[in-house]
Image 1 (tube, rainbow, N blue to C red):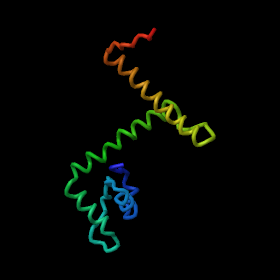
Image 2 (cartoon, rainbow, N blue to C red):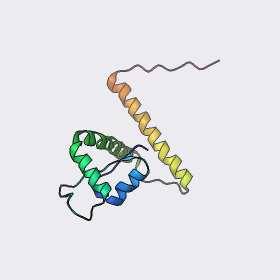
Image 3 (cartoon, rainbow, N blue to C red):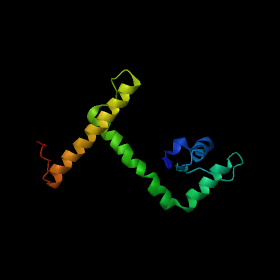
Image 4 (cartoon, helix red, strand yellow):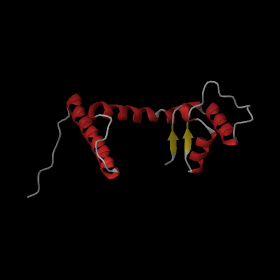
Amino acid sequence: MSQVSADKAYLSSDNLQTVVDNHAMPFIPFKSNSITGKARHSEIWKRMFHWYSFNQSHFMASYHKRSNVESTFSMIKAKFGDRLRSKTRTAQVNEALCKVLAHNLCCVIQSIYELGIEPTFWEEAA
């Protein structure tokens, strides 16, 4: 893990510190009413606020990668449902991975039709 993107609800000194302690860069945008002068803010909060303020274009480019993930999760939930029916943890992980695989196959098939690509399949070995 090299970076963590989260929405404004997760902005706290504890969350920022946890991400940094795990050798990752937190991309959690600051709220419009965030003020650096308050004594209650930790050193990591102040440092991240200054980094955010002076590197907003880089920050927002990295933060908005999360939009792709959110869109993908939304598409998977819309097409295959937002619940897992399996009982055990292992089965739930496998079920979720199958939903991701099915989503990827749907995207490939849609792209084949939209872009007019002629798929090439390998011949079966004798």
